[in-house]
Amino acid sequence: MTEALRTGVDVVGAAVVVVLTAMIHRESLRLPPRVERPFLRFFSGFLLLFALSRFLGHAVVPVAETWWEGARGMLPFTGALNTVVFAALAAAALFDRQTGQAQEVLVTEKDRLREELEASQADLRTHRDRLSEALATTRSILEGVVKRRDYSRRFPNPAAVPCWELLSCEAAECPAYGVEQERCWRLRGTGREFGSCRGISCTECPVRARATGDEIADLAEMVNDLLYLLEHHAQEEKLYLSALSHDIRGPLGSVKGFLDLLEAGDPPLSPSQAEMVSLARFSLQRVMHLAENLTIEGRAQAGELKPSVRPVVVEDLIRRMGREFEARARLRGSPVRMPDTPRDPTVVEADPVLIARALANLVDNALKHTPRGTPVTIRVERGRAAVRIGVEDLGPGVPEAKRRDIFLPYRGLSRRKGSGLGLFVVDAVCRVHGGRAWVEPGPEGRGSRFWMEIPAGRTSSQ
Image (tube, rainbow, N blue to C red; front, side):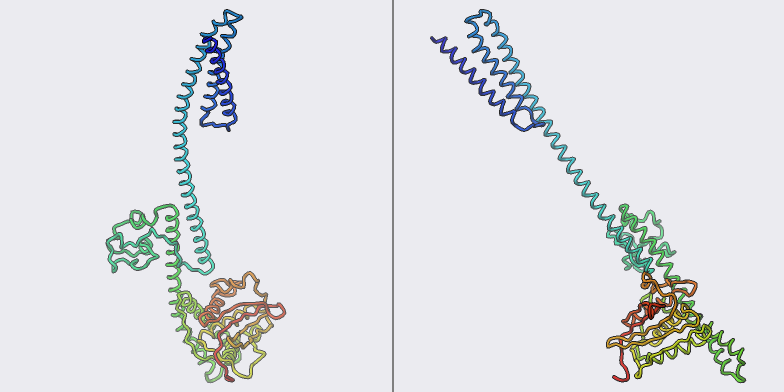
């Protein structure tokens, strides 16, 4: 009775274990694949094998003994199977531990690599942003150089410190002292040596080493060096041209005086002599205009063009232009005329010398481009806030794409017909008076009409 009860309990227990382990294994198979930790499915499979082995040893073998005496010989095999299963379970547990440790190392290494990659990407984004900013700054600087001949702008470089902060240069010895945009090596490039910096080559200069800490900063400082040399050369050129124009105005004035004496001499000049004097006066006038334009251009570029304002009668100025260009207009058959003369004089508060120079440049430009035998017309329009003076010609006109550029220095449509300074001087004179200059198509779309706009002063009717 006791043996039967034990056998029954073993059979039932073995069957229950098989059922339970089968259920566990089934649930483990339903889990999503886990490449990192497959131990759970392996464990449940080995556990099911152990339950089946136990069921064979405790249930199937005793039952089989009733009709086959050799069934008991299967028991050692079921015990060996249990041993193998337990060994496999132990190996699986050990393997799982080792793979878990390896996985932790891999996860740690992956996290480290991810952090390094993110840091590298952040550095690349920073360099990309710096490079984009440097390219935008370079484009802006070069546009200023090309369009306005402005070399004064520099790359901002916070890493560049003044030379006297790193080197023992006294303020009196270092010409860069107080000049934030310039560096020692740029000033040295102009032949100016100073203080204890004299013995240091530019390639070994600690100031330059700090200013050019990376490729972008090095490129920026190289561009800054180039801009400085261009600006230095341009300033020397402007000073030379300004001094030259100033020096030749005196002798030209003397020649003009001699021509005046010849025309007023006694006995009077013959018609052929008068014509020769007129041609000489015309040539002299062109040279004097060029000298005056060079002087005004240099002052305007240096920001030193300051008008001496007083009342100017516009109609008197136009009549003066007619007399000044009379000989040239007669030679071309292109009269300078003002068809609509206002009853009351038009007065503006302006510098008479600068306004006369600007208007003369517009008339000179019109005579250069209008066909022979066609007139040059000067118009005056009054407004409440400003007075406009327009000069019309019947020449080829100005393409719309170039209507702004022709007011830049040395940008005339045809360099063969002038220095390219006249319209720049017109624009500069208008700006210093608070006005503006522009060009538009002439009457009925023919030729060009250049306008000078000057803030209104007063008229005699006011």
